[in-house]
Length: 341
Ligand SMILES: NC(=O)c1ccc[n+]([C@@H]2O[C@H](COP(=O)([O-])OP(=O)(O)OC[C@H]3O[C@@H](n4cnc5c(N)ncnc54)[C@H](O)[C@@H]3O)[C@@H](O)[C@H]2O)c1
Ligand SMILES: O=C(O)C(=O)C[C@@H](O)[C@H](O)[C@H](O)COP(=O)(O)O
Ligand SMILES: [Zn+2]
Image 1 (cartoon, helix red, strand yellow):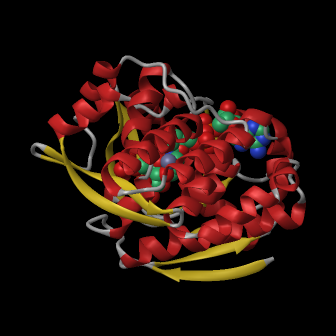
Image 2: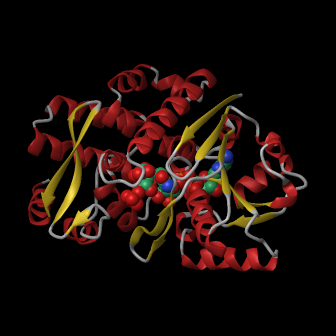
């Protein structure tokens, strides 16, 4: 196990990398904590969590909503959770986003921590303090930025992930390579087979490199007025497609990154050969690259992207593999570009 601490504006966050979930009692008191645990994770790994009080959360993106938020609040009241009760979210990004949000508003804020159990949640969703829920057709429309007390990364939990969820996690790892780390991009190309088969050494390297990249960016710009926007590479179109095609976040981001690479080619001098390279890498990790949604429907949804300011969107483009830039693109131009795809 490797312990690390990252300092953010409101508090320091302890990361326990390569720690077993069975050791959770070393970091939180079962008498003063409540586990919010994904139903599948509870079925597969719940036996390692005896002696903890649990609230199970249904599995699926459709449950990251106001109704489940309300059900969790009802459970907290029923269990008489007070301001010192720590909420520990154990699951994928759906559970960590929900847990952080409930914990941030229940009684105006209680402490919270995460045990991310999907690759996507270990490399991305558990880090950086973006907590929130969807509202109708809009992704993460209600939310807050607030940091957990600690994050426990148990790599062994990933062994039970369905193959599809494994692929989804790689979408965000590829994102980090595209926006900040050309050598990670080479590594992902060269070590694809070992990465996809979950080779323990490669896996811990990929999680820890991703955690370091994301934490570094968030430390620099926690409240997203500058470089944190890069973490949204592939998400502007991706979030619209996720809702329209009802697909997993990782897959939607994969398609969004290909679209954003093509846009980078047209508007930012990004080499065509690199769009091809990104597309191939994404496909080679079992992810889709082709958007089938109607262009107008995509445009209508992305108008409400959180990076919009009046009539333009701060769009994330690439300059080269490993270097992102934010470019304000007028909505009308974006619409025309989407139509020409
Ligand atoms: N807050 C952030 O910074 C951030 C970053 C990226 C993504 N997200 C959000 O995260 C969500 C996607 O997260 P996700 O991909 O983890 O999906 P998810 O939480 O829906 O989990 C995917 C599936 O895996 C199952 N599962 C979880 N752990 C398992 C395990 N160890 N073994 C077997 N099955 C397991 C779940 O039951 C679920 O069916 C989206 O809502 C996205 O918007 C948030
Ligand atoms: O942490 C961030 O910042 C990100 O943008 C990470 C994304 O991978 C993640 O999907 C995030 O939830 C998207 O945020 P949003 O502000 O576009 O809803
Ligand atoms: Zn994402």
